[in-house]
Image 1 (cartoon, one colour):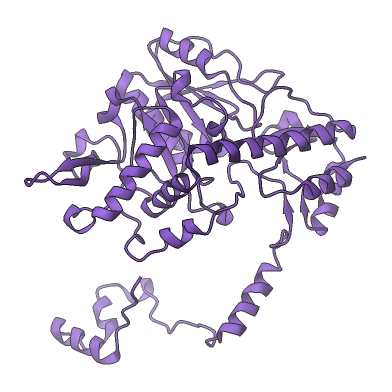
Image 2 (image 1 turned 135 degrees about the vertical axis):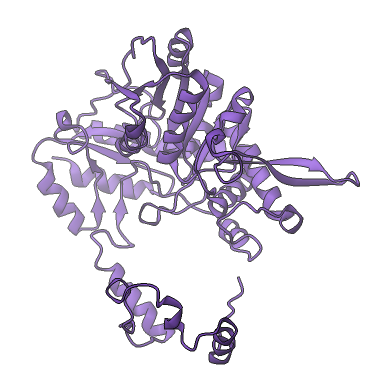
Length: 441
């Protein structure tokens, strides 16, 4: 991306055109007590060597430094990203956060997003995918609002095994509308229980793999939802699971949405994320966000345009489906490059490796006497019960550079002593064996 600095002469010429002498004169309408006009207190500039050393010293202050063995997933996963992905996504013609408004200037970006939509729709097993949303949590909130629009109903049943943060975002979105949220309990095997029935039910929301890593019986929930005239929303935090397990669409989901961070994006302290969103073609006009389509110009040449954009800035506000103002274009493009680089065969192989890593860790802990409370199929992560005194041991391991999972008690008070562990293809067998040795009583 080009950097175009303004010289002092450039600035003086621009100020002369608008009729002021100083940059501060542009802000005279702001009260002095509401506008900071003090010089910025910036440290002295550093050379490249000094700056790298400074950044290394800051990184070393983290509880888990760059060399740590981290066994936490819970919605943000460490996966290997082939170098081709950042190399292509970082090209100057792609570096933008927006879907372009001017197709005649942006055919490359539009085509890349179109391909991303195609691969996302295939991955999720549904007919149409949008150009992406902000992240998994907001994608789920938008899916719930969409289901309410389509059905004309105002009650949503959400599994307690949907990511706790996602449930908080949904509650925040729905609070002003007065919509009802019914929480679905989970059973002794770590799977969502029967949601029951409701005359005003707009959707049943289930996450698979769920927050405990368990694979849910989506087709059963689809049948339950459809029998009541409701929709099934299948959400997820780990889309790589669909390289091994059946897609949400194949199991009857009407909407599939979730986090796409695993598709070529680093965890980056929790962001930026990528909201994947797909639905059935019959409901495409109720879908939030934007849709890139393929068409032909007046000379018959193929081209790409924004086919659908039903936000409030583009159509009458009362007809808008969402106030989503953009898509995560650069993240979506990165995910598209990642999926294209892996291909179908690579995606299946990678999913199998992740499954095998978690299975190896789970079996090793069980053999060492660690309780695994929820039996059944999992992907990437699972729950282990270490006991009430493990918190102190956890701190000792942290000092050794081992992050031994996520304590579930703050999110599920009834699960004191239970920890969520994650293993991906980035963990070696030595890493897994080390954790097994360190946590063994």
